[in-house]
Length: 393
Image (tube, rainbow, N blue to C red; front, side, top):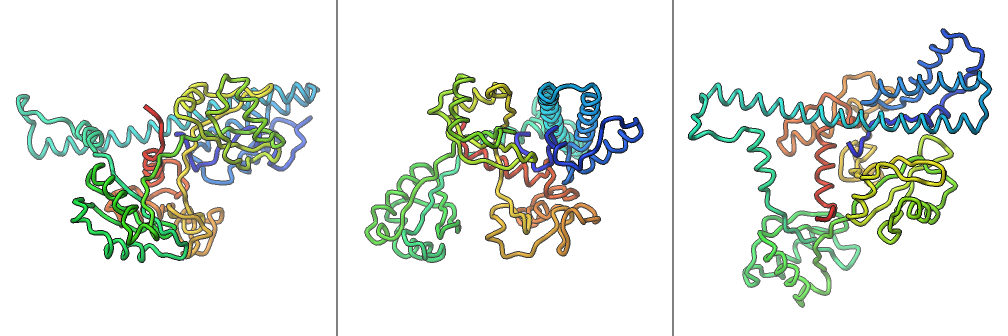
């Protein structure tokens, strides 16, 4: 999957663990320390735990052999860099396998529903045969109509969403404008979102609000624009500036520098490196993803599409951040209050999926931590985010 909240361990993580004297160490001691290294690197529950252990074990053994062989520091660094590339491929394959397992589970559920339906109603004749449950579900998804939504924001910062709603109801006559709406709900920054029945009605609504003398001075209606797709580039030397990054990856990978924009950087596990997030025009985004890696000076940098839903690390619900959360802090593993995830020994219970089941009448499995990369609510949030991204034709 493009993005996952699960821990992703690389060979660079070896530098974060307590140092061991690997030279002249007998095999039993080496194996014992490898287990300690692996356990220390997995600071959070991970769907890739076994791959992480194997990777850390292999890198530790190779590091020990290189030291015993008195290989120069530069050669050792070069060998470990190549191993890091191999490890990245392993994690990408593990992520793909995890995604395929999720799709397989969904298909099995659909087939079970079809079998039950056939057992209840009998096998339909060939003349009147209906499409399978899976096919019908896909057809329904394809036929889902586009949503026509406008955002209405107050021009004054101290105005609430409720006040905006009351002003619209009082001063905007929809019958006179000859349009209808599906719903109106509160959104952040004191605004409201209004969904119309058609694109024609949406255009009428935006025009009516922005040209209405009663509300045009205090409110502004706009249609949300789709965001450009984003890419995260892993393990860039922390000393590299964003200007240098753009210049060198553009020159070395035949990328149009005008078509990409560096947004921000994120801390990595290694203190000497960080991850950079950039956005790109749709066509350039596709070209970069197709490359799989980017050349940068004498190295190759791993990359993935960056799609990250906003999740509160305090209450573990989606849609807001912890600094704006009034709820009590909960454990990301079991959902209970009073302890951290690292200290938890309770059975896993996803509070996000529990809330979705209750609020939206879903039937998500809740027997997992909220940080699990296969969490149904997390995957749903990813899908919703992608609907608002401009991937081009």
